[in-house]
Image (cartoon, rainbow over all chains, first blue to last red; front, side, top):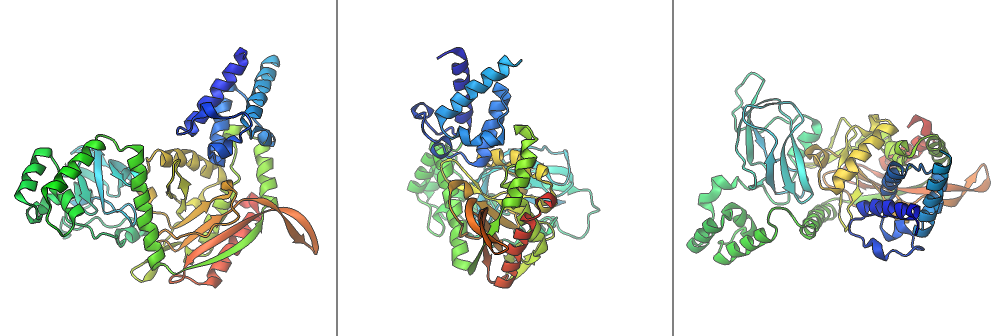
Length: 89
Length: 393
């Protein structure tokens, strides 16, 4: 795991942990649907995206929401976006 | 002088524990100011005082569990003193308060424990032990109701107080919230003759409109699609005021403002439905700002007393969980509960041709003592009409 992967993972896990403090995140499988597994409603999901925006500087358009359902896809998406945003700066 | 009393924060509340004071004797307070924290089954509530004046003295002490109606403090009001005696409770400031002030409570309010200590039936051993352990006998008599309080009762309560020590554990909080919901819902099912109506609503206009709005906005300023039905319901309640208000003392009491209760589920179970004040007069952005403030506070158990008492109807949206429709139970003494299910693509006929549209089923549970099916049908049609003009929401 490189440093960008680690940073994204840490930020995502911390944000999910704040929304679902009762859940054991260490057992989450990459293919699991996080909104179903962690009982995240649409309001919680918006809070999650706001936290991601604040901490990683990535603004996720609504059109991409469908690609963020599974934990593995979400992490891969954010790793790519963090990379792109930094490369373009 | 006016007495500031332990408020009734819902049909299910008999007593609350004073956690702390936010005021001191001599302080000048304004109408609506948060003056105390009170712990109830719904969490620690910031209690507002609807009198303006000067704090004369504080009667309740932090840590005390007091019944609804017990004197918490004495306020010297700015008004010229008239013939009213100081024992008269504050005059209700709003119609909603007037309604809740006369809320029929499950357990009749008992008098302040300090005043009734003499009348509590307890064995001498129980009294002695209660004094040693610092257990409030007034609280005990509430639990023991008619029978004589015995030594074992005192020990049991002392043990549970120790276990729950300074703050309520999450498990205990959930158990208490469950009890509060059980009391309110049992009352609803026992007393309210519910009737149900449902209608399917085409949301294609509303969704395209909010998608276009959000596409141009950063994530921090986006509007949740579920806020559109919220505003539409608030406007429809204004259109059909018969459904906005309370059924108290065998008659309907309509209310001036639309204070829409929003059901917010808690992680680990349970829910609260705090009021969004004047929801019909707030823009979608203002409603989003309210949600950003209200939902985290509701989940943390930090609501204000007016939010718990003022709701004039309740909205529950279970669409996130994938259900088609909601058959609601009304929160007494309200008259209506509106439910939304999930939005899904469904066949829809437009000008004789079948096409696919995003459709949601809206339901109304209403109190047949207060209103009729015709009015309910008009209400659901009004919700539909407002959702067809999202730019006006």
